[in-house]
Length: 80
Image (cartoon, rainbow, N blue to C red; front, top):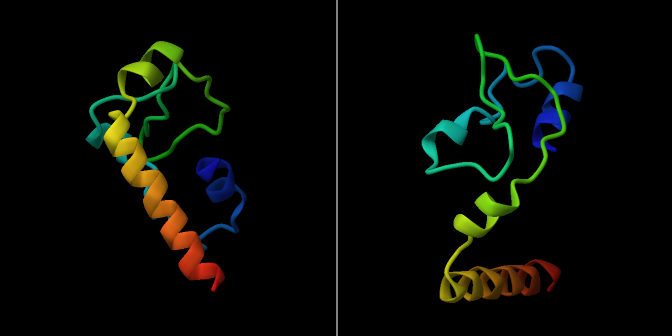
């Protein structure tokens, strides 16, 4: 959805610096066809989740719990 938002911005609003080409820095992707830049641009599409990759790259249960707790603490802090 970040790609759709970046594509909707007026030309030059962010000078193309949206951080959307970072997928190549990760161990893998959880979509059928990764959104990789070609000649500095990414085609605006709606990717489909790859269920096998989603399971393969899932966080360990303790890490998942850590992130969920962090989100709860951040939410409590921001809503105070």
